[in-house]
Length: 444
Image (cartoon, rainbow, N blue to C red; front, side):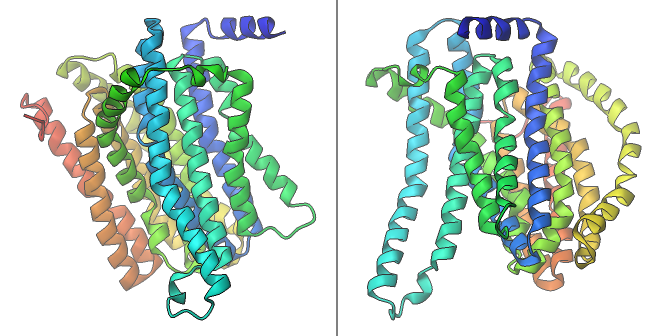
């Protein structure tokens, strides 16, 4: 039976374009199923629970970026050549080093959380009247924090295993395995609808448990012994330093970029306002589907280019297609507001003003995306990190000030305007590059 399955998967992946199609389909399934899960979940929650879920979801996404430790890129970058050259010693060393880095990152965040949980539990039991009571979170708050931590950790392990499959160019298994996390979440959510009133804790549990169950399924299609092969300390320790050096800018860039995308949900400190804002923002996840597809499609093309003129020509071809395509986004200005009111009800009417501010910013991200994607192919992680930092710092200031003075509409304007400093930075970088002066801020 296993031989038949292996033969079938092998034939399924034999054609290059078909293999790329499998990868694109798998990559698109994640945002699509995540959007479906969030829409169904938030529709069943009260407005206050919706706000708590929205803020918790944002925290999970940010925590995932930290716990990934940049390994999703570096594992593919170094493991794929080692597998192709059948260098078993390097394969074992890279896998062991990546596991070691993952454990370091988990310990850095998990051990303080565990220590605080134990201290808070003991304090609540033996010192209920302590003057430091304001430092002790309730049991409900602690459970949400643990759901956030385990959700971010589960997603970081899931993406790491996904990168192992990509390094093996095992697109058939990717196609069948990657969507399982979204499907499991939806099944768990459907099960919660029977016999109980669904709360934000239930939804967060379903979101957290999905990747962990999918991780167990991973070892039904991929041999676990691959991760258990021994590597000498002298061989894997240098790889820890090498991966860390390669990852540092990518990790910094990922953290800054995700924080700039989700910080307004963490800055908004009222659950009802967070729900109103999240209802306007949730449909924007459709743009994440477009961006994910663009990234997978364009990265393969940018990675083949060497000369400056080749990049210029490809940018021209991309924008000859994108600029006329702007008309496709116009119906969204009518359809999405109608959907928000029809789906959530009249109590979310305030979401419409937030939506009309956010929507142009997400459309413009489609047009700025090719420049950011090309920087990966041009091996410029430093510039990617700097651009993300510019957006995050600008966003932190503009969103915080906007929310303080004008509420959630001010936060939306801050989110929109915060994109422009980063795009201006990218424009300056590419202007220098196309003028023949190279990119700025290069190491000496």
